[in-house]
Image (cartoon, rainbow, N blue to C red; front, side):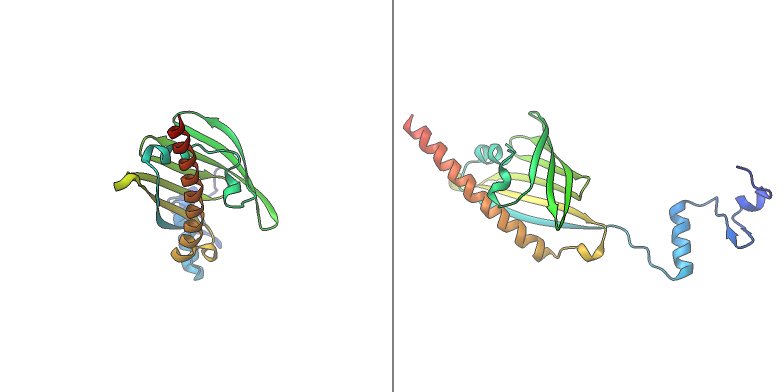
Length: 195
């Protein structure tokens, strides 16, 4: 598209009350407009949260249990979310999760990259932006520690959870998972002892 007075348009000069800043990026244009109007640009806010959980089970068992991703995992925490698996390989697991967010139905994609025997990486798409890294470490007397780091991105500043709020929910879920994991480990070690 050609302007009648192209040289003035390219230089960013005004044409009447219209400013044509063709030499600067659209994000820079937006910043200038906001400054001129006294508005604040608020971008996404990313928070990092860290938690750990210790299990009375060996590292190999913990890795396998934590990364076996089943359709009925939601039952452990009483969630109503449902999973539909799209891919399951030795390196990666991908699924769609469907759940209620208040009164509306929501769904998103979850992907996990497996890095046996010590770690895995979690990513989300569609409904939220959360990335997680999980690392296992053997402890004395057959215990295993799982260290987790999550980076959660919020579009709305009012939805940002404090570290204490986020940690409370995450710790509650992981202590529940620990009970189920340790119960399954006792069953499997009892079965091995009987063989």
